[in-house]
Length: 223
Image (cartoon, rainbow, N blue to C red; front, side, top):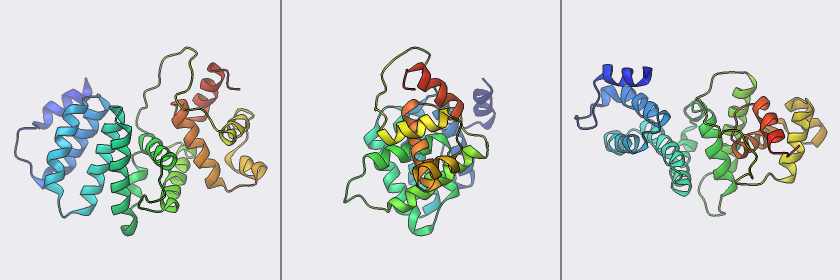
């Protein structure tokens, strides 16, 4: 209700002529619409904003990211990954980091799915994606706020995508109470690699914290 009140107070309408001076307000509105799962409206706004943003790389990247999030929320995973790939190809040469990290859990999930579906001829480097995921993982560790993530209700059911052997290994160590550094030492890998696996776990278990990952894994009888 508070979000709806904010939209009304802003006096924003999809039919109005857009002004780039108010772009930040428009993008905030889009985030509200995605949170409320008013995804058709969000996509209409984003299509109009993309026309307004032409020639301004940072704005184009942010709009592509939000398109990816809205498409992913609609179940259009392939289209979401395509939009994210375009955003990354524009962002990497310019060194954009904060723009992606500020998106939190939704961006981490999209990056994990992009990595899993990556083709050999896909543009962009995996190193840049891994850096973003590592920073997203660090944000979790530091306890900074994240956008709310919808988690299915309780009940035993199969995962949409099974955990890999390495992910299961990391999950068992998390359940045992090991830190990221301790897990890295035990598995003889870098901490950034551990964070990559943890983000993959979060995506597959549909959670956003260690505590919820443990609870969900036990609920599913994985550990």
